[in-house]
Amino acid sequence: MIVFQRIFATQWQWTRVAVLSLAVASFAVPTALWRLGGDNLPAVVAPFVIVEAFRTLGPVIILISLLGAFVVAVLPWTVDAETRHVYPLSLPIPWRRFVAFRYSVGAITLLIPAIALYLGGWFVVWQITLPDVLRAYPFVLAARYYLALLLAFSASFALQYVFGRRATIAVLFILLAVGPLTFLVAAFGDPAIVLTLKRWLLEWPGPLSLYAEPWRLIDV
Amino acid sequence: MSKRAVMAVVLLCGVAVPALLAQSGPSDVAALRRQYDALAARSEVSRELFDSLRNARTAPYTDSLVAGGRRVRFIAGQLSERDQAVLTATLEKVASELAAHFDDRATVLNDTSSWSLRPRAGRAVRRYLRVDRGATRAAFAFHHFVLPLDSAAVVRVALEAATGALPTLHPWLKQYLRSGFQLDSAWIGFAGAGRIIAISGSTIGRRCREGSTADCRIVLDASIKSANFELYYAPEDWPDLSRRLPKPRGIPDSVWTPNQEACARRAEVDACRRVLTWQPPMSPFQHNVRTTFVIHAILMGRGPGLDRLLAASDAYTDDPIGFFAHVAGVSENVLIDTWRQRIDAAARAEVRQPLLPVLISSLAWGGLLLLVTTQRRSL
Image 1 (cartoon, rainbow over the protein chains, first blue to last red):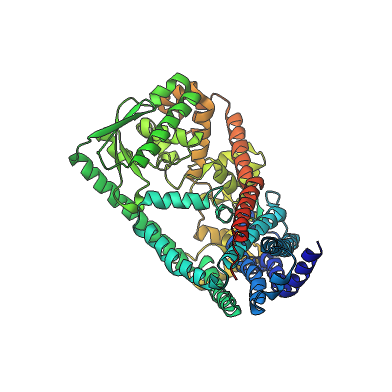
Image 2: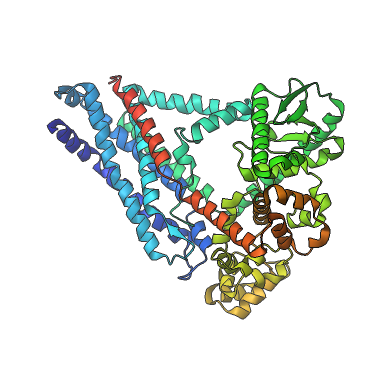
């Protein structure tokens, strides 16, 4: 427990700027979208205007979750690498447990941006006069956001801790080889394979199914 | 990963995010692009259909499969095993769902005449399978099978495929549904109809959703012209509506802009009426909403309803709601109420999807990745 507390303290120190920046961005996104999409509107507007204003909420928070989780996952490893991993190797616990602790700390700290999105959601809903037909779903949105953060964090974390110093090469390989390959299969391959691949990835329980479903703050 | 690499990725994303956001936002260019793509896709589909029809006359059907009591002929080698499996599953599902809904009358729909089928050659429209119900009806048969099928999809597929003559029996029905039963992406489902009625800019729609049968009749009326916008848009909807209307041709800026602003900003009724008369808005409730009503009536009528549907004369030409109440075997008000409840429940169910499945899959994938991570030490 003491080791976990020490790891938590150091990791929080290293990642707090990133986590808090992520939290600020998460809090601000709903309000920013409403200001952009619902600017110059009277106090009471039609339901479709409100729903339309948040049309880009999903893509925006997905991008934020991918980027934010990546930074939170990679940053501690980078700091460890600068000191040639002396700190983790000097701890009286096996590497496996150390990695699990690092992961747990990251997963816990990512609750902060999710809570920020929940508060940001309520904040923007408080500013809008919702018609009777519409309901706000900040909790569901925040919960899904946390899961999206967790998933992106897990992938980035695995990439970094499995490949170590060669993670950059692995990322480049994915971008340069797998990306174009996917494009080629999509453009020229058998549509049945593409369809199967899409379903496997995007339909439940596929790894990306969470991102494929609609993200709604306000809806019927 | 070094700090430099992390910074590079962050910077790259910092550049990419605004660009992607700009792309995702509404813009004239994006709208034009979408229109262009839609037209191109439609053109492609038409060309593919034409090619398919031409080829159907020359190439012999040399293979067949039997599923759901139906024999389907196709050209050997042109239908992969996977396609055959999908088709078999679809037909069996259709047959069992039809039997469940329409008992022994399902055979009326599940026509025993053989189908001849050809998968589309073009990759862009590969998912479309053309079904010929005999050479004379080839032009009506352009099917999009979707799995998994729900009961509404079954009815649509069955009606389009097996009673392709229905619009011929009732020409007004074709007008009511604009182009027959929609089997393509225009099908929005009960949930889609529920959302349109709830969030459209029409107070009439919202009143319908709240239980006003009279307003639902307006929603389901296909005969209202754009010029009668006051029927489906109440005065309180006009300012929001006027904001979204483009300037019509023939009206100078100096006339349009002050009126539009007076309507949008100050909600001046006279200005709104002028703006909406110059540029009459379309009804937000199109054939896609009405299709759900028709499907609901047929599902509600079950077997006897199907008899009434196929046997009805043209006595109902001017009264589609009355006709479908007759098909469903209930009063008009009951039919409208049950339809409203159905689409509303579907819309709510779609929005309020349970979190548990997503939670389970996300935690499982996260746990799997963590397990992989802990198995290897790479410094």
